[in-house]
Length: 155
Image 1: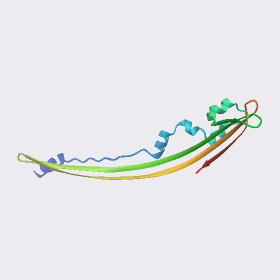
Image 2 (image 1 turned 180 degrees about the vertical axis):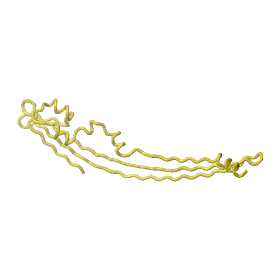
Image 3 (image 1 turned 90 degrees about the vertical axis):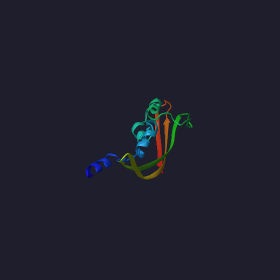
């Protein structure tokens, strides 16, 4: 009889546990920054730009310049001036929700009771970084790269 009562009580007992997770900051960053935004880097300039390249080849590698001007001798100069601010916020949270329902049948009357509780916790951090990259490409009279320079900073 005792075992039957325990089995009845266990049959109306329920517990729900909810655990919640978030994306990492790196996953959020990858979702919001496209390939084009990461294209112009010091490494790309060092690896891809060479003296003797045509303007079309430079544009294929770096994209369109911000400024096109001429020097004192009428030769074309392209300037790429990029400023980037990355703000990354990482947040994680988790929690547990527990519910308990106990009931029984006594004669023709159904009696029951319930209790519940929850616990939650969250934490986060924010990071802000600014970067600048200036690339100057100088062309000769035949519109081929004669010289280039770059400057990068990060703070």
